Image 1: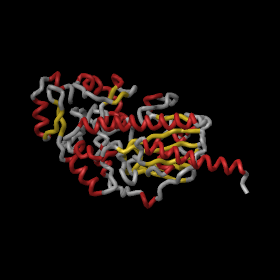
Image 2: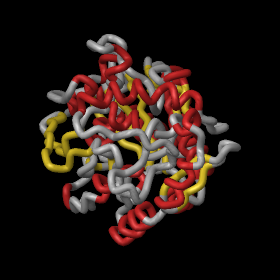
Image 3: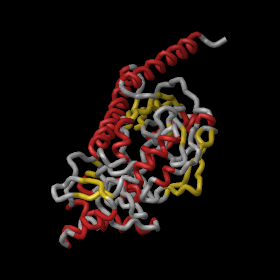
Image 4: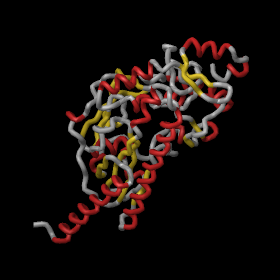
Length: 357
């Protein structure tokens, strides 16, 4: 028979866990999970929650859905600003939930650390912030706690929203009641590879898988190529697909190298033109980017992945038939045919054209 104080503690943790989940859901999350320190053992460095709180016993994982109604406009090149703003707002909401939840737990007497949704990196790796290694991986916490599962892309897929979510986490000293990973048969990823096909940078390898073990549970996804590929294309420094038939929302068409080693020099060469082109009214603030700001012009691998394969196919068709983005003299962007895009560039003087190719 368990001692009364243990029973009382267990009851208190059940109650606290329920309150924690209620708070996250009430403030905008669509799914919440709990993972313990032991459930993350054996994982990569960013699965170690004690990195941000040495006394950590558990972590809360949750996701905030992006507005699904804005995704078609993004792929069809009919709506740049709406989804961009929604993405920033949902990242802010995720970070805000983390802060509110940590504050709640701290006031309950359990030291807790909130984790920002994005653009937070470790400074003690070989390359510091430029290595883009998170203090704690939201993805690892999400898949181990059952918020979602890994797709081929390495993005976390949720049963209801697909990958179109922003993840968030809080690390705490409280011994919250853990949740289990989703069953493998709930993973709708069928290796359709539309995530890979929609990535102009070639970031998703698609051919070689990597596996990780978190607390005795195995997970796998495709190996990624160097992260500078994603910085280069998603950040708007370039964006023309190798077919020449479609682009991201970036009007630039600088070469997208085949070899990883060539990406960092390509990125450096594209920074000058990037800073001189008319920018958008909104931006993501990121300390590793020139001017501390970066555009969002892609995210295709995340947005294309929907539980319904017909939706995925429809989004891919929108993307590949959306045309090529060009930038007008007043800074506005529009999608035109590849032929019109070439003619648009040919009309520019050499100095202006050098900003784009």
